[in-house]
Image (cartoon, rainbow, N blue to C red; front, side):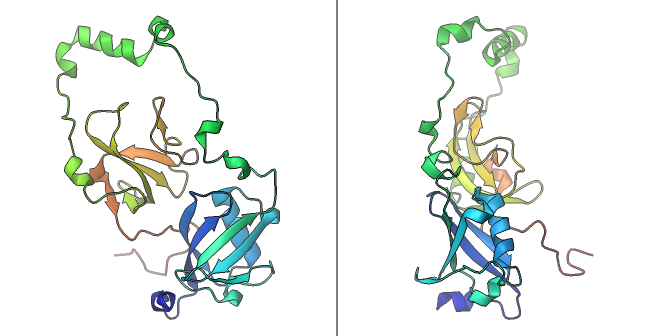
Length: 248
């Protein structure tokens, strides 16, 4: 099978695609130690998806989407179930009152949005619109250096939603969630990224405009020249690097 070709001989970890029964848009490539118990795997996944350890059931599928086993013994090491790179680990949440049920984490239409009329907004002080007006009146040339609407459009040619990526500075990894113009930001093209870790600034909403959905503090929107797409699987922040790696 294709998964066998991906396995690195002597490696004590495995890269699995993780999905969730309640979260249709949740999908992540996560590396696990084969020595980790099923219980510690669930603990790691709880931090990713919100399903509690006690309510979590795990199913293992191969790269042809055939179910191989239920990871039913929490004390067993993950390696007992013989997963290979490219296999899928599927999460089932048994708690009917879980935060993952009912679509609340994905369907933003279920959340009541704050709105304000144009008339009420005009009456407010300290808004960006009034600040921009004062800036233009005090220094007309300050707003003159506008970038064209197609600024950096060419750099987006090879970036598409769903791509794994790395964002500079800091080599922060994540997945592309948005590519295009952002009306609440400067002219030109932007790329929205959902970081693997809570290193972002928002949940996909910027200045009252939602460009994509992601967990709080996982979202960022940057210029495309800051984004590199490719084979950037999710990293385990607690995974130690081999001795001497990164040393000159």
